[in-house]
Length: 103
Length: 161
Image 1 (cartoon, rainbow over the protein chains, first blue to last red):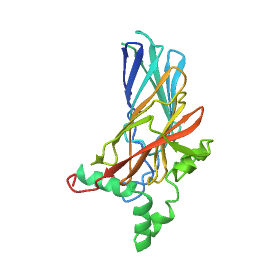
Image 2 (image 1 turned 180 degrees about the vertical axis):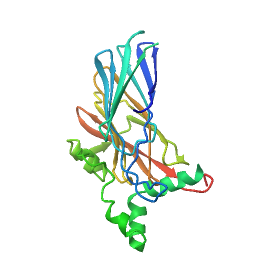
Image 3 (image 1 turned 180 degrees about the horizontal axis):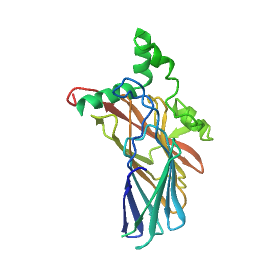
Image 4 (image 1 turned 60 degrees about the vertical axis):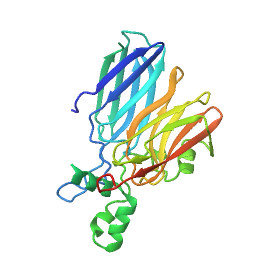
């Protein structure tokens, strides 16, 4: 299981800004390991961000997103105490979901 | 650190690096095994596209127009092509999709973000850019597809030469 995401959600006026760091190797499938063999592709394919139960972003990613991906987004209609949930699913079928509170 | 970064860039340099190696006959085995870097089972056709036009078509559009109402913030010179910070903000009404496209990457589309109502047309992330090339911010609104691009110079090796 991958490490937890680092999520920060802050309210500025009426806009919630979410910043998230995910722990993921994001292997393209083109890189070679120390044994000279290609490292199999392994990357996040979809990311979903929800505030309480409302989806505020969904993303389709390819292998070109950097290792340990960073993502920032801004949405309206959030308030302090709301729960921001971020879920990713990768090309190996693994997924991880983490939650933060808007502060 | 430096060494592994260089190796990483050489290999993720993708198409051209592989073609070169294959051409010299040094790596016939790898060349045979390297048709698509996409993981097995990844059938999303927008990621198969090689050019901006193909990406637009795969996303259901016909053509993208240049627009001055998209802010694309990217470094002019990226010392490390594996981590290129990208920030995109659209001032176009009804923005529902923001995508990052680098045509010289093995797959032109890097990432696509679906923006529902209530979410600001703003996104920041970090992507890999294989070699010096234009990075394009592609935006879909109710009126079609629009784009703006910026040249990102990727300095391979050296000390940020």
